[in-house]
Amino acid sequence: MEKIQQAIDKARSSREGKPDGQSHHKNATDSAATIKYTKTQQVNSPVDLQIENRIINLGIHNAYADAFKILGTQIVQRMEENHWKSLAVAGVSGGAGTTTTTINLGVSIAKEVEYTVLVVDANLREPALHKYFGIQPEYGLSDYLNGRIDLSDILIKPENIDHFVILPAGQALLNSAEMLSSPKMCSLVEELKERYPKRMVLFDLPAVIGTADTLSFVPCVDATLLVVEDDVTREVDLKTAVEYLSNTNIIGTVLNKSKY
Image (cartoon, rainbow, N blue to C red):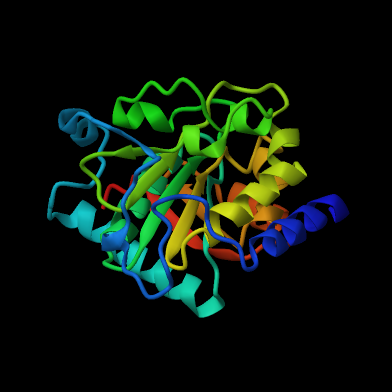
């Protein structure tokens, strides 16, 4: 933990008085609309696939979209109150729909005029976020953590979603928990969330129960959102997950796949 804290402190201090280095850097007084993504790779994401994968975009208005709009508003309010900018999203157990929840929460927040959103696929065991957009990235987070590629080469912006960027996971790793708890990963979190004054960084993570990945990673972020699957997640597992995460800020829970 001491090495992680040292990495976080180093990342913070290295930014003081220094420019972003990206041509789309913005000042605190700028709105998200002024950002020009000149280095981030922009790709076409099939609209039909987004709809099939239940991604809320394209001005769709229904109860499903409204639920995420309410959730996004609540999350932003809580994050702003506490000056938080990085959020881990994890299911209590597998199959809760965490990736869909993370994406749609990000899209909802990105629709706010002053916000930009970066969604990171931190599921280094079973990378899947890129599939929801029909993207086949050559590299990702795992390659960055292994020192094989620069961050600017792995960020991707779906062309039809404004103010919204994704960082794919890359190749699956056998030592995923160790990489997620590494000083380099925690330093990256600090870099990502501080690049823009009005940026929210969301991390799509594996389930809390059954893997060590999320527990290893959450000390690096400001808060955690738990995803509960309706009629599937057991009360005992939810209590266990909350106990496991007792040393982090649990911002709330999301009831997913509800039939009502």
